[in-house]
Structures are given as structure tokens and as C-alpha cells.
Image (cartoon, rainbow, N blue to C red):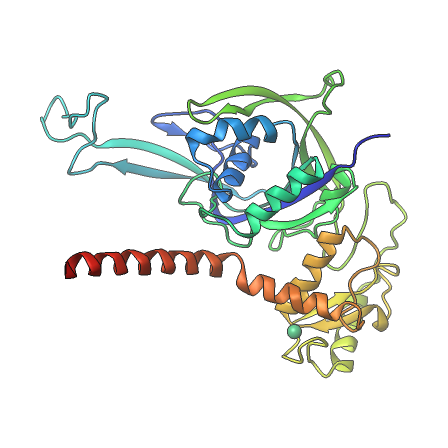
Length: 367
Ligand SMILES: [Zn+2]
């Protein structure tokens, strides 16, 4: 019998992301998907673990099996970056560097590459206790997290749930597709994942130098990666890689049944009675040929709460029903959690820190 494994899912979506792949100095490129070292760095940030303390934690985190799902690959672009213009930069000896020809303080020029408007779902699979620990860090981060570089602020909450007792690839199939604006790839979403540990490296495996052995002094080991394709729920439809029998949706069916449901609910969210913006599936049993009873009208915050519970529970065909009294307290709790976590919590901590600093200063001034 194998030990139970859990997978934590991270939604990595932002206007800009940049996942350094080892290039340094003047030309800093990005990999075409989040790197394992970048994602572990993000997790350590959330845990408030500094570079000097990171190495001990890396020993625990590195064995986690890593995978990334490409929901929207994004567009590459360059930033012409200057540092120290006008005031110079310091040499290793701690003196301001001067340009040889002009004797003016030197400006450091670099070109930095970014992925614009990309969207990924990353998964890390391993020991359930460690996965829960990471989930706690990500739901209440000590330092703000960023997607590869500090200027790359997440465009949506990073923590996307924990899936228990499910294989990494199947766990990645539970999160809905976030690729709005691009066409859903007919052969499914691209997955880049760690080759299975303890087995011979498959012949088609590719190497990536992003398995961070140390962050204090950067040291990256090679990591073998393999590719796969999966079909997560997308556009109100669910399909799995091993399921070829999905019925084709009749043209116009979805828009008709969706409007029918919204009319039945008087255009109101069935949970909170505010204006409904979305239609939610309580089952994907009849995908492509949904009955009006398979759907519920929801506002966006209530829909997000249902989806978060579904990710957390690893639900596939049968989903959360916001009309079911058994689910209602949990949905309300999830809405509260979303409201009080993430950005709001970080903002409160900054305000608290500022208040205590200002308080300290006025005491000093009064003395
Ligand atoms: Zn609502």
C-alpha cells in the first residue's frame, strides 16, 4: 500500500510573470512556464522564510512532485531596464562605479523578459501534512508573493485548493480552465511535470535546471520533466483525458439553457439574492445536454466560493449545490474566508505595522 498523497494547486495568473531560467546579468530571460525553484521561492515567501533560512526548508520541499498546467501561454516581451541612473551603482568594494569615458556614475542596463497575460495552474504533490502546512502559508502569507520577480504581482489569489488522495495529473484536472481570451486547445492543456521519482528517466524527458538545492548561494540541480495533456472543466463542460465519449454540445444549447435558468431564478443569485452574473453546474452528468435543474444562477463571489469548495474536495462530476441546506453554512464560511484572507489580510498587517511604528515614533518624539 502506498502512503497517502495530497496535491496543492496554485493559480499563477498575472499581467506579467517572469520565471528566470538561469540567465544572469544583462540579459534575463524567462522560461515559458513557472519553474520549480520559482514556485518553491514563492511558497517560502508566503511562509516568511528568508533566503538564509531557506535551505533547511528546501530539503523538505524539493521531493514534492511538481507540475504546471498551461491555461494561457501568454506573450513574450522585453523590458529595457536601467538601475542606478544619475546616482550610480556600487562595485563589490562598495564604491560608486564610474563610466570610464565620461567619469559619470555608471548606469546598469539590462534587458528583462516577461510573459504577459499568461495563466498557469501549478501543482505540488506529496505528504499530506506538508501540503497542509504550505496551504496555511499561502492562505495567510507573511510576505507578499510574486510570480518570478517582485514586480510580477498576482492577478488573482494564488492558493487554489488542496486535493487529497488523487494523483497529481488528476488533481490538476479538477481546477477549471482559466484561459479566457484564447481558444481551448482541442488536444487538451499542456502539462509539464516531474518525471516519476525512483524510475528510469523516460527517453522523451527534457531537462530543466531549476531544482533549487540552495537559495542562499543559488545552486540548481537538473530536473527531468515530461509532458502530458489533460482536459479540465472548461466553458461549463468537463472532460477527462481518458474519456472520449463526451457528447458534442448542440449549437446554441448552452446559451439557451443558461438563459432559461437565469429566468427561473429571476436573474438573482440563489445564494445571496444579489444580481446573478453566472450559471453554476451542480452536476456535469449531462454535459452538453444540461437540464435546467443541473444549473443554479449565482453572483460571482458566491460562485467563487462554491468553486473553492469543489477544488478543496476534489469534486469532479457532482458539484456543490448552493440550494442544498447542507452546503449553505460552508459556502457562507468560504465567502467570509475569501473576504478576510489574501489582499485584505496583507493590507491589515501593513496598516498594523505602520500604526505600531508611528506609535513608537510619537513616543520617541515626546521623550
Ligand atoms: Zn451571491
